[in-house]
Length: 404
Image (cartoon, rainbow, N blue to C red; front, side):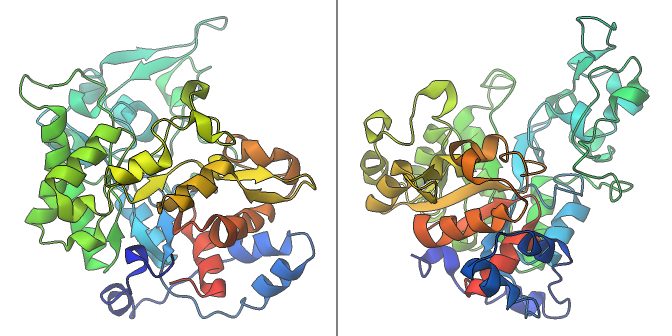
């Protein structure tokens, strides 16, 4: 599977990055040092001298969002310097229907300085409301569709988060999780989708744009339908002359993915279904009878890539060892390529790892277990790529295991 399209050689990328060597920093070895003793740890320690290079197995989730403001130029550059072969732009739209990189159409109050800009804060869908010290939490709702493209571009990115106990805006915007940092947040340059394409292309890397669910009613402004939205995403790559084989368009909306497969077949060949069927417990990853549509049904519709959260791909055997879930086995059986999300997004793993590790919590008790999970995803699940908020981790593993 690792020789499939997803791992086409970086004929452009390695040349583009040759003048700026991949640098992984101390975190990967910090994780390896914390691993339980065993063959995997010994193997990973043998790779500490490098060499380090770009790998498509290493997918940058919103850039390098563990420490850099997400979907910013600075975060994308950091991810590239850590060897991410593929970089994500979550695409949503502004009031004038320009595509921009944001995780959600309505997260500007969490990820930018909009509330500190009175003239723009006044345009927010829901203005800032302070906490009252009892039951009412501080809140706001500021959307890309509240602003024109020019207004959006005037904002500065910040680390995602807010203090819902705040009584003032300055208190509210200071919400960075304690396992992240504001050290690199002094400058957060927001990106349009087209700007992200130009930057990632200049680095010789690949693209994994996500078409975000609209928070406004569709069709927007009377004529911007969901299909027009999906079409506009692909149009930006066509306009930039990007080889479709370098693009992996993704969506949680299966209809978007099927639209690309049917109407944009060159790009649809890599279209990726972000599987959220766990919501409401509609799908049990240990019971194929709950998979509707089935993995084979999805493959028969032309789907080639599926991307669930990490925990859906993993289970524990009778000895408490991490193994592939029934979901992972069925996806492989149907010939689907698997992409997992998202590593380095749970804070400390000392107490089970949280939501992303919920199916294997009993086997997670130290930071080094990140590498154990990666090893199972790569070797046993057969994932062709893993999203990470800190791509150096996935790059280190991929380099050590010889995954291009």
